Length: 332
Image (cartoon, rainbow, N blue to C red; front, side):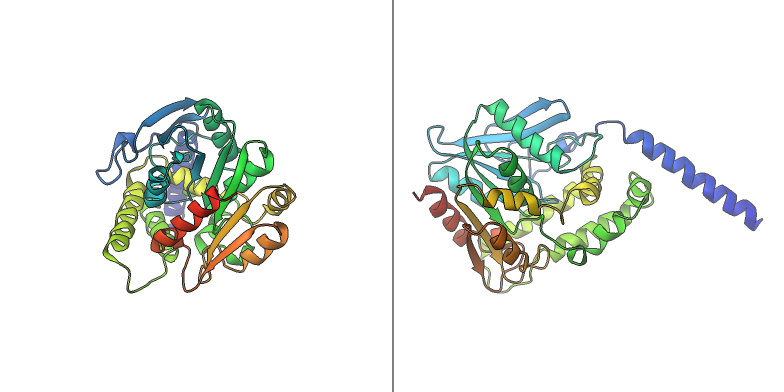
């Protein structure tokens, strides 16, 4: 009887694995199937759905069309809503702003592919080509910082100035969150993908990871507290309702070189380009000590350190950070 139970359990696991593998060949839909009132398709002005070879992605282009161009690249979980304050501030101050959802987040689909450096840098390159931008400033936060650095390394002729907020790519294996370490074990990623009985556990694990990026702080003003609450709700809604989020998140954890972008940073450091880095000294998600290596690889980069701030410095200290970025982008 015990042997039969083991046999049927094994058969069930194999069957679910085959079903999951077959699903991996299909492009999965975005939040367009289940829009969220806090993050509707028109969250920013002039939203556009763009069809590319990998799938359909969404971007927003707004602000002063005659102003200096700037594209914003978001991180692994939140989607483009993380730039709620910065994007609007830059547009109000005369910049031409381009914001977009990377593959598998927000209103961008999740193609059946490897979520690696090539996928994300080529998405940005194709987007800029489609909107007709041949020169732009680039801002990236966390994963988006790694993407922005890789893009600048490969497309130096396109980038004017580069802003990196706690950028990924220089982490060490010991720095990686537990969920990242587990998913990179052989076969684990493919097994857990699209498994309905594992999905609730993954939601819980990703929510815990998302919470670790936020440093508990007191004394924040109401506007900042409201922004944090809104972005948190958007991220949580996306975990549950974006059909392709898990594919993209898990695929990025496994395939993106979070620990292997040193050559890209070094290449950017050899370019004659203004670079600004912003970091909270209490950041444990992309540890603050990564900033030391980043400075060694990019010796001409300017580093601004915010004391007693964590990985979410873009949100918790948004007025100060927005001003720092604006001053950097407009400086000669």
